[in-house]
Length: 318
Length: 319
Image (tube, rainbow over the protein chains, first blue to last red):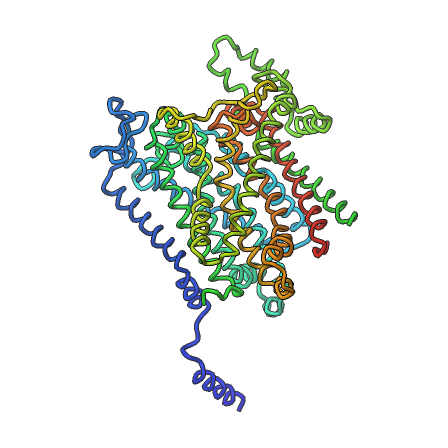
C-alpha cells in the first residue's frame, strides 16, 4: 500500500510542476547560461584556444624560434604582423607557441594544485586531531610566505639547467616541468582550506554515519561521499586557479626564472620588452600582455559565473 | 579578548617556526653558493673546501639550521656572500623604500576605491556603474608588469620624445635636499600598483555597500527624513567600509610580491629588488633574511588585522 501512495504523490507533483525535474547539473548549467558575461568569457576563451591550436598547425615552431639579426626590433609590418623582438624573432609566431606553453603550463599546474589542495584539506578534516593541526599549520606557513617570493626561491631551488624533454615529437625546454611543479606547489593552500571547512561540516551529517555503519571504507567515504559534495568549490577554484597559474607563469618567466628561451612563453617574451621599452619598442610589450590580460579576463568571467551558478543562495540569475 | 590574543599569538609562533624550517630548507637547496667559483681557475679545490668550512656549509643541516635560528633570534641574519655586509643592515637600508611604496599605494588605492565603489553602488545598474564595473573587471586581470611597463612607455619614454615634461624611471635615493625628486620617482611605481589594486577593492566596496544599503536600519534612517548624504556617509559607509580592514590586511603578501616586479622594472631600491637580485646569485643569507622578515610581517599583520577588526566591529564574537 505504501508504494501506492508514494506513486500517487509523485503524480500530483508531476502535474503541478512546469517541467521535468532538473538534476543539479542541469540546474547549474541553467544558472550559468543566464550569466551573460560568463558566456562571453567562455566564448572568448574558446576562440583563444582555437587561435593557439590552429595557429600552431599553420605556423611551425621553427618560425617562432628563427633568429634574424638584420630585421631585429622592427615594428609591425605586413611581413611580421606583430613586429620582431630583440633577436629578430617573429612576435606573432611566438605569441602562438608561447600561448600554447602558457596555457599548458597553467592547466597542468592547476591540476597539480587542485589535487594537492583537495587531498590535504580533505585529509586534515577527515582525520582531525594532530593530522589536522599539523597540515593546517603547514598550510598557514605556506600562505604566510608571499607566493612570488616562494616561486622565485623554488625556481632557483630546482635549478634551470635541465635537459630538453620531448613530448609528442616536439622538444621542450626542461624548465617547463619545473615551472609547472613550482606553481602547483605554491597555490594549493586556499582550496585546502575551503575543502577542509566543507568536509568538516559534511562529516557530521547522517549519511556519512550511515555509510560508516554499513561498513564503507575510509577511502570510499572520502572519495565517493565527501569529495563529490565539495565539487562546487573545487570546480570554481580550478577555474580561478587557472587564471592565477597563467599569471604566475608570466610573473616568474618575466623575472627570468621561469620558462627559458628560446622556448617562448607570454611571460618571458616580456622580459626583453623591459629593456627595449626604453627605446620605444611598444609592440614587444603590448602584444604578449594583451594576450595575457584577455586570457585572464575570460577565465575570471567564467569563474565568476560558475561561482554564482554553484551558490544556492544566489538567485539573481534564475 | 586577551585569551584570544594570547591563543592567536601562540599559534602564530608555531606557524613562524614552521616557516623558518621551510625557508631554511628551500634556500639552502636553492643552488650551491660556491657555484660562481666553478669556472674560476684561481680557486683550487682546497680553497673551495676551506671556504666551505669557513662558511659552515659542510656541517649537518640541522646544526646549520639551529645555528642560524639562534643568531636570527638575536637579530643577526648573517653576512652576504657578495657584498660582505651584514644582512640585517642591508634589509634595514632597503626596507623604508618598500614601506613607502606600499603605504602610498595602499592609501591612494583605498581612497580611489571608496569613491568608485560608493559611486557605482549608489547608482547601481546605471551607465556609470556599468563603466566602473567593466573597468574593474579588466583591471582585475591586469598583471603588474603590464601597467608598470605601459606607464613607463607613455610617461617616461614617449613624453620625453614628444617634448613634454616626463617622469623619471630611475632609482631614487632619499635626499633631504631634494624631496621633490624622490616623490617624482615614486609616481610611476605607485600608479602601476594602484591600477592593479584598485579594481578588486572598488568591487569589494560596491558589493558591501549594496549589502548595507539594503538593511533595515538604513531604511529607518531614510524614513526619519535624513538627507541621503547623511544616510550614505554617516550610516551606510561606516558599516560598509569595515571589511576593508581585513582586505588591506590580507593584501600584504600580494603587495610585497607586487613590489618585486615594480621595484625591478623601476629599479626602485627596495626589499623586493634586493631579494630578486640576490636570489639570482644564490646568496642565501640575504634570501633567507628577506624571506624571514617578509613572512613574519605577514603573520604579524594577519593577527593585527583580526584583532583590529574585532575592535572596530564589536558585533564580531571571538571564538
